[in-house]
Image 1 (cartoon, rainbow, N blue to C red):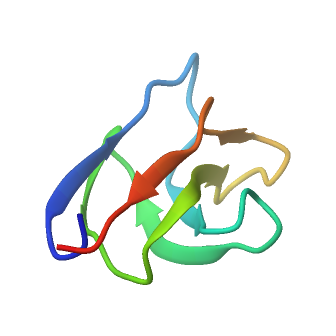
Image 2 (tube, rainbow, N blue to C red; image 1 turned 45 degrees about the vertical axis):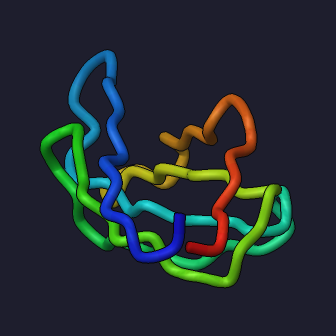
Length: 80
């Protein structure tokens, strides 16, 4: 829900260093950065609009851009 704070969490197999967290509201066609250097496997995010039901999260290693992962399924961001 827009305005809520949510945790984005991840695990890795081996060191990846800080990660850039990106959000897509259109099923992965375009991406916006929501964090530039998350490091501890968890990042708080204050959900922002616009609403969408095609939201994906992508993590990209800041040290090695070949290390990347995208959420397994779309999520929805809803109006409050």
